Image (cartoon, rainbow, N blue to C red; front, top):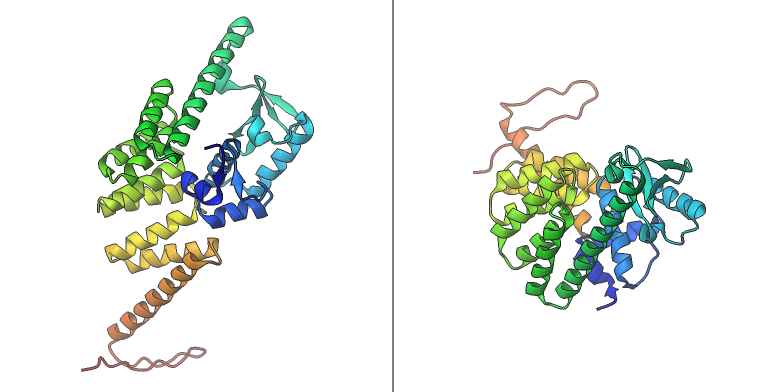
Length: 313
């Protein structure tokens, strides 16, 4: 398969339709119905950046600046975007550049203070390894899309042998096992992703999902809370947290996350469901407080009169 539909993209990247539409409205990716492998890579980068709470405007400005500085038509595909503190930079042709400041940056992560021929050789080896990992990753995605799940598993495992620190590989492999209902194995892989990259929001979110399936509510909630701590504007994590707290019988905690969710997702069926839950919880809390009242409380100036509520026989 050389092309993917919008539904394929949503499923592979585990993003919602509203997220994809939001990126299109923000000008981060062109609106289309068919996507290529290169588009998947670009969308994966966008997902990671948005999960890290990088503003869409910052991404758009950095991409536009890189287009002007390097003459690239699509920097998200032609270069590797990295976060350096509060700013964004691109790795390209063995160098790292801040396109807005138009400055070359010293790449501590890759070069590790190497110089001369040793640096060139090291960079070449890294590029070869990355190329091999990327080829295996794409082959695994193809196998997964073709319904060849066991072949996809083998390819992801081979890729992780080449690069054991590649957290997205553990995520994708874990998701296959999750859909096969092999939840214990999925949990193991998601946990490895959280260890390899403790700042990887999606790893904690997916870990929360599988722990929820395993009916380990406290651990599931802790994983979702970690995802929210890393990315406070991660709407789906707030949604799942609200559901988890409701199931646990903690309506006030659920209410807080339902309210956070509707601030982030202002329309659509999930937002409407969240609003329905908010109304139910607020109505339930009002009745609970009224029933606990010992009797009539005289209203103060500027407040509405309260009525005594009697429990029906």
